[in-house]
Length: 460
Ligand SMILES: *Cc1c(COP(=O)(O)O)cnc(C)c1O
Image (tube, rainbow, N blue to C red; front, side, top):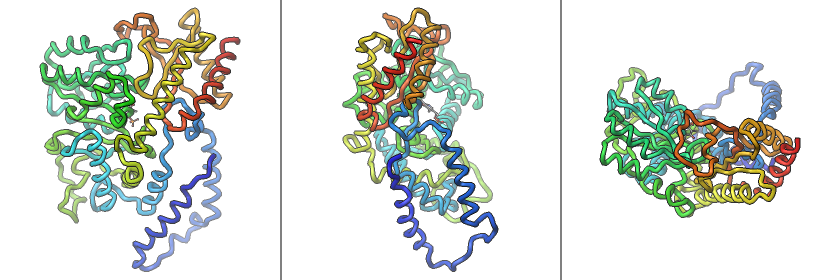
């Protein structure tokens, strides 16, 4: 592991924080045996030992699932805030951290081109999507929510919780929502909300938001953008291919947007964000809590959030990170996203050019964002799936950690025609999310290991 700057950062900032409360009379913490440094160190050592049983998510050779290490300053800010442990439910619980949340969310909204909106942080993308679909359901009672068959699996579950009907829309060979299939559903007249996924979880496909918005003008429905994974890519339009660029360029026309700072935004877990274009939807949250809201007439975030307690530390970490790395095109944060995308394009290129011809990348072409998926060539689908599993394991023995994903086999068919995701045969593929800026510099080393591991798997 590289030298960790976080402990030194925390101890410097903690001194300053302690000085803020220096006027209080000194007090001893609970003198019980459980507060003895030796006793605490002992159990912490046990915890450190247990944590070794993880994939090394922080390392560039971890290139599997959607896991990006938090920025050191985010970890330091989160830990600093833990000595206060504010609760952003209400100003009573987290006065400073609530203000920091409002400021941090303002910058995220600004990234999408919004200055007036209603929004706040949530504990996850799922909770953020739940809020957005809850509001959608209230605004279109009795109508359906639809999303592509590659939309995140939680949309269906959320709709069931909300008791709103949900249907999946077919995708094309690029993994994007089929506009023909969407229009068939719209003609039935009962679609209240369309979920557009900007960056699907499996392959990073970008639904054609611009075309969905054109249909909205004709049929009238709400558009919710699920950018939990892909939302931040609006910062690097110059690196995107045209269909994705057009989709991101119209994101400000959505009715609601979700983005996960704990995915691409360098934050520790516990940080999602939901935004509504019309601040008036705040009326749906109205409630009277008898025991909070005593000290301030200002808006409490708890009045516009479904969740009650929320980690103030998450807001402090996000605020601090965005001070260091503003969400602006051309900035260091944006350049980091572009590096991951460049790594994904390079891996895809090498897979296509592989001299031994061992791989079948997507027929549709290069990845839209920073996720690469590919199939191993074999005589049968069963064998291809088995080879992917074996290659996955052979990579892991070389410290290269990839992921597996099941995708419609027709995505690898030469004509890439529209397929029904439910009926299409699935094949197990390898998947790599190259979301760390370091992945670009590590691509040779990733490729070497992948190539050797696949040679083993094929020869076995
Ligand atoms: C990860 C993800 C979610 C769920 O977000 P969590 O923060 O894991 O709850 C929703 N939608 C998309 C597109 C995602 O990638």
